[in-house]
Length: 347
Image (tube, rainbow, N blue to C red):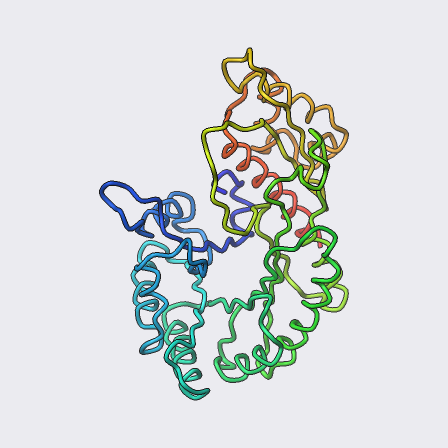
């Protein structure tokens, strides 16, 4: 994300979900401070949203404490106020928890206090709605938890969208969006987000070394935007959104992905046994990409000065700037976010 141009970073507001960090000898609980350090390196003074993971595999005791709803989520609010010193343009997400709250009144008091107190320190806040939230629950929260003078940015998060399910998810999202927009509060900023990039992009392409996967989140958004023209686009930046325990030790198949307006295209080649490194494979794959007509279109749109385009061109020239999957994931992310920014900025 740090390789985005200043223009894109000023316009695209990322939402970072804090998880535990990797355990080390000196920090065996995986402190979230290490995650914040990474954010600080690229977004210290740039607007961004912050949330907490709800995945049990990615939580630790520190995150558990931040989720406590006592005194209007005081632990979370104190944490946010501390972070504002480092991140002056931080946009916090409102947490949701009914643990120990026995009735509707107790639920309303805890969550409304959170929203009210956060509004004292932050000019904006995010209310994140998961895909399984019923319209009645949306109606209840929207009517009871917020002040009309400072309504939140609403993020409808549809999560992972399987292949060919974009329209089905759009139909579900439309019902939830109707509930959001019919509230007495004047909600101006509503974001619709989802993710469809698969755990293995070859799984829908019979394991072929070249293939293309539709971005179902784009299809979902375009369908919903017909009915809700002011809807704001969001996605997971082509990251597989479900927790994935990676197994190492067996190597990988060098692959380079790049976006079109509505899909992600990939090329890959296995490392030959006679090759001492992954560099030759990435050079070959980059040449496959450069000669792909869809990449030629992307190159015309983003120009050679675009960081991601430049990395692929360097590799095709015989000098791959990275030979690890994580590097090429960062290239895919940068290209996708930059292209979607270009598309959305044109209206």
